[in-house]
Amino acid sequence: MQAIRILLVDDHTLLRDALSQQLAEFVEFEVVGGASDAGEAMVLAFELKPDVIVMDIDMPGMICFDAVERIRARLEQVAVLFLTGSFNDHYIERALKIGAAGYLHKSEPAKTLAMAIREVAAGGEFFSEEVRARVVSKKGSMSPDDGAKLRGETLTEREIEVLRYLARGLSKKEVASMMHLSPKTIESHSTRLMDKLDIHDRVELARYAIREGLAEA
Image 1 (cartoon, rainbow, N blue to C red):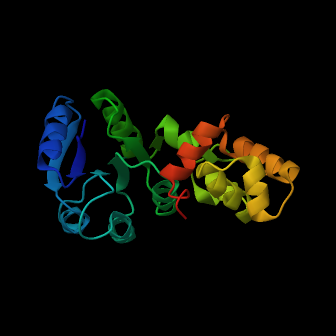
Image 2 (image 1 turned 120 degrees about the horizontal axis):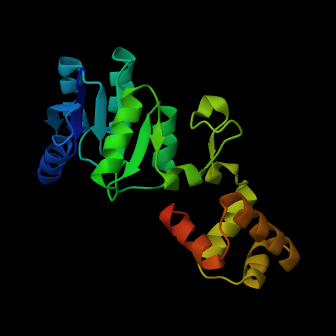
């Protein structure tokens, strides 16, 4: 059986080395290289032609999404699996749009990463449950071409405005006054927000807004 060739990309050398050691325990994997940023990853990808690129998102230098677009323009067969500590809708949206085959959190165990690598190397996709929970898709696919949308993308401008005020700690009555709307209307917007985001209490709603950078917007 031919080994799955992997390129690791992370700006933390210790993490790259640890991942390399963990993946070496699986006989079907071969780590062919490591890069400390997206620009270096692009150069190595063209040179080494790996089967799978396991890449962080928050790194100095070239934006990882730009690098992946350029890599996949020349090497369509390469599967990109993002392994990151950054879970927000903007990053997930960009990852889906550039055709990432997977998106995992760094807290996942090595066996989950190994499972993901096998899946994407075989032409499939592997997204963490947290990512899937944020996506609304009629066809069950994570591809934007199949109608997959992040839950945040389903919000109207008015609902986002209500969310921002609620996340700042204002009561619904205070939000109504700020927006020159009735408390009943704000209550309706709040209910729709929770339904669309699959969030069931105000604390989680505020956490979502803060995580997505909406609380200070």
